[in-house]
Length: 344
Image (cartoon, rainbow, N blue to C red):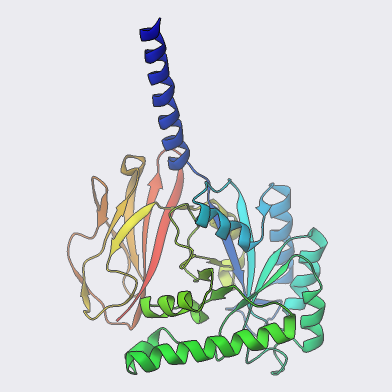
């Protein structure tokens, strides 16, 4: 009897471990949407039409997506919990006055959202939200305000132009100045930060972490998985030609590729000839892998065991490139990708 109990116990343990691994392998993911302007025909590359925005918000409701505050997704990452399927968060960058058009629609659905504010512009420049409009938005219990810098400069690129200590000091001063102004205008002290232009480097990230931010957000067009770092969370831009419904639906269905590590690293690199390689979890699930580099376009990649890589080094010339590794998931029958940015 004792022997049978031992065997039964072993089977249960093995089943539990398998179930946990399966849960991790097939965990859900979150899609974080990023908007800028609404219904502004004079800014076609950064705006979404009101008609399309209404359709998108209705689509989320009708197809039972769970629209959650950003904090919920950040909590999943800190606790290393599986992310439920169909999780979505809505973010708006800069704080343009056309945000008020979107605000009415978001309130109608009762959706939570985050507004990352360009602190120098708000309540000061004509194109940005006024004090009265910010107060109106701040009364909405489901809004969160984030820091989007004070000056909204290309801070990531500026690491090449000054000594490191001066660079860090500049980031600190700009960020704290923005914190003070945003808190004064909204009553909230931001705990999250979105990189201007979605650009970042390792020193920039480290500096913001030291300032106490709980999460940092890019504009890398990828979904969020249990492997995502809270200090580099991707968001999917819904702007210009990317804001049409056909692409919006595809955006929601693209999974995160489970990349464990990659070469080159994020941010600043000092060599313009690079090898590109990513190590992925569950490699047996994926096929038809490709690698995208901003200035080069798509290139077929070699997949060997758990590695996806280019077959030979590639020379880059632009100061900034985004690298995307994309594969087809045979089990879910969806495409999956992972993106990071490098500065040369």
